[in-house]
Amino acid sequence: MAKQFDDLSDVLIRFIEAQHMFFVGSAAAEGRVNISPKGMDSLRVLGPNRIVWRNLTGSGNETAGHLAQINRMTLMWCGFEAKPMILRCYGSARTLHQRDAEFDALNALFPASQGARQIYDVAVDLVQTSCGYAVPFMDYAGERDVLGTWAEDRGPDGIREYWETRNQATIDGAPTHILAQSSN
Image (cartoon, rainbow, N blue to C red; front, side):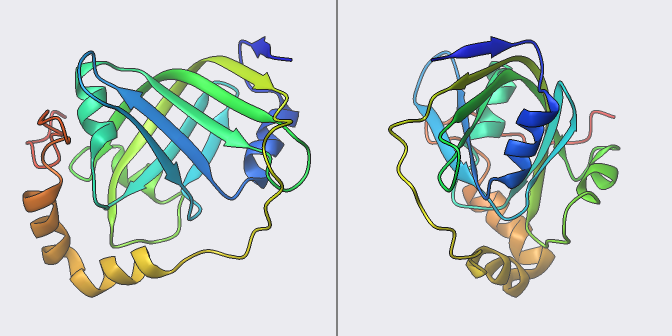
């Protein structure tokens, strides 16, 4: 059954590194809870209590808006291909935009992408594993290239226009600060 830890062990880090996708959960005090699947080589474990993941431009920008209101985040992985396990990391996160001083160094940890929107620097304060016995087996068939191609076709100006028209507020109307001035 469920076990809790203060940090990620080497075994759990290897489990994370073997997964092709993860899920992000966030919520403000009011409004909708957001759970979003992520993939595309967008996560790095930088220590037993530190994870960074890069958010690419997409249809919504819920996580940024939620974190601006309440700084909490849950990351989750499921063992679809081998060992049945669910792993959750609970914590807080700093939202870094392209305008922020640390963005470029952390963005360099990932493959180049025209659509890089934010990087979340997660401070993990609780790790929990559970059995995952009800998670089905699923075979990994490969990455989709649709989002990368979409961002490349738009280019930097098209991405910024998309942020202006579609990424400035959550679905509940909270600001995401995607175009705010630098705080650094």
